[in-house]
Length: 249
Image (cartoon, rainbow, N blue to C red; front, top):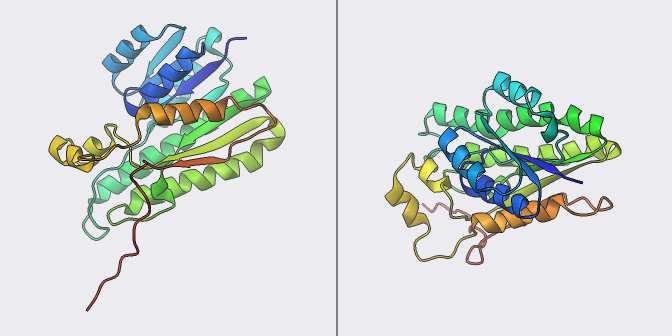
């Protein structure tokens, strides 16, 4: 029986790799993101049926219209991958632009909520499903400049656990995938397009790849129904935990 996965933020990084991973396994994909040309290019490379939706997850009406307009052959959705998210800036909490905080909350929290709440009734009606949320180790381990980004990912982790509590009797799984240092467009976005700053983050190290994360997403989504993976926390092999910050004097 053909299965269908809906992926947000599929135009780069984890989302792009996740679409390709599910496609290789014979799944239908619903790919969404803000950059239409990238969606079209990805769709052209996928070998199984794929439906592309230009979508900004921060726009609630657009999210609801996207789900309502799904072609019949792409329903029901078996797996929703809430991948769309971002970090903006690395300034301290006393200096960051409030607009940057708002953008992270709107995308990482509200956008995820819109997609999840819209998809869940479809899953309940179908008798099951799985919601996979892309979190971050920043949700568990604070670091200077991580302020609201880390807080949004802590929300993702707790919301995922609460989803599972609500939905366990309805045959719907919920998983938080929390990567650490990964080489995607993440840092380019964080530094607002400054490629030199973004490249410096990965200089001399071997970070997690988008394919590594896609493997974790696919594995969590395809466990037998007697197993639910609550969370997967993964760091680069060269990465450990921040030392406690101590200010002297």
